[in-house]
Amino acid sequence: MEIATSPIDPDELRRRLADDGAGAYVGFEGWIRNENEGQRVLRLEYEVYEPLAVKEGVRILEEAKRLFPVLHADCVHRSGLLEIGDCAVWVGVTSAHRGEAFDACRYIIDQVKVRLPIWKKEFYVNGDSGWVNCERCAEHGLAHADLHAAR
Amino acid sequence: MKKNLTVRYFAGFREHAGTAEEAVTLDAATAGDVFRALAHRHGSAEPLGHCKVAINDEMADWDAPVHSGDVVLLFPPVAGG
Image 1 (cartoon, rainbow over the protein chains, first blue to last red):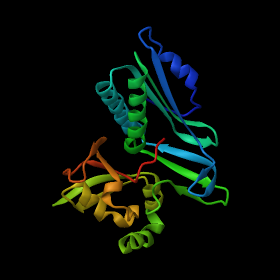
Image 2: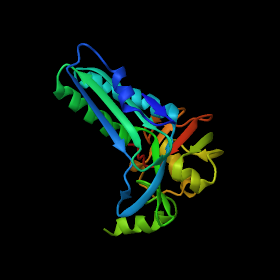
Image 3: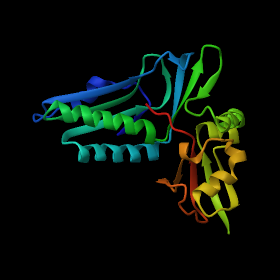
Image 4: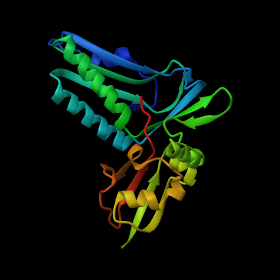
C-alpha cells in the first residue's frame, strides 16, 4: 500500500506481483474523467491523510487476502494535482485461478473508496471547484439539510 | 467534564474553519460530542454517519470516549478512487 506523489506506472507495479504460482492477474486502474454529475471537469486534486490512508489500506489488503485465496495484492493511490486521463488508483491481485483475483480486486477497490481518508477536489470549466461527496458541507450545508429534511 | 483537545480538520472542513488544527477546551464525552460542538467551525451539516473520525491516528467510532490530550481528526465524507 502506497500513496504516490508522481504518476502511477501500472506495468511496473504489475511486474512486482510476478509469481510462478500465479495463473491469473487482475488489475484495476481508476482514471480521471472529464465529467462529474453534469459538470465538465478540468483537473482535480487529491488530499490524502497519509498515515491513516496507509494504515487502513494495509488493513484492507490483509482482509482481502484472508477472504480470498490470493497470492499477492497491492494498491497505490495518488495524491496531489491530476489531469484528465491520469491514473488515480491502481489495484493488482494475483492468484492461482481468475475467480478469486477478480473478487479480491473488486473488494479492495470498493473498500478503498469508502474507507481511506482521501478527498477529491474537482476544478470545473466554469471556474468553480468543489469537494466531491461533500455537497452538504460548508456554505451549502443548511440549505441542503433543509431540502433533505423536507423529503 | 471539560477536556483539552487538539482538533484537526481536513479538506472542506479545513477550508471552512480556516485552519488545519486548533486547541480547544470542550465539555465532550465522545468523538460525536466533539463533532457537534464544533459544527460552527467545520461547517458541516452532514449527518455523522457520512463523516469519519480518528483519535490519536486510529480510526474511531463516534461514541468512542475522548480524553484530555487526545488529538481528534475530523474527516468529511471521503472520495478516494
